[in-house]
Length: 165
Image 1 (cartoon, rainbow, N blue to C red):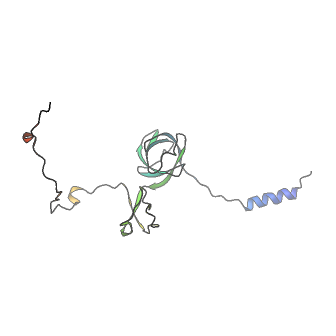
Image 2 (cartoon, rainbow, N blue to C red):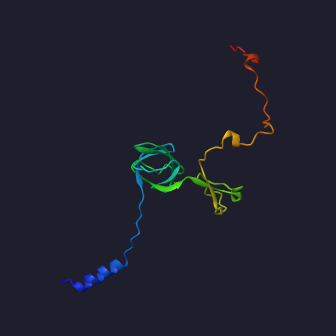
Image 3 (tube, helix red, strand yellow):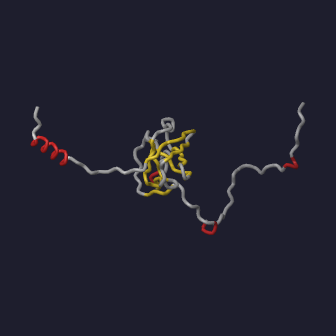
């Protein structure tokens, strides 16, 4: 069977016409430890504090401990499907949640996604999960006491201990 140069040329031209140069560059690490909602991953050298990370099984996590060799991650979803050796990749986004009037009365998960079956939450405002607290001088002063309804504790000197035999 002879191969014709015209057929090869046509095939190459078709492949070049359908060529897409979309590159997906992502920093990917490897999970080295998983336990009780916490994971550690190696290879995420440029991860940022509070960055949202995506695991191989679709769960998300938040970067917490940024060390020289690995990153400590709080898992924000199902951690039963995450195993040592799985991949985890950076999203490049700091952990944030939706805010606004649309969230009043709704039930959301740790990522701010609705879990109450009432549809999507339409809001265009977000806030980072971790923000620096305002200084003492910037806070509003307390103008009225908070009544809890519980009575004060009895001082230790007034307690009576019964000896039970």
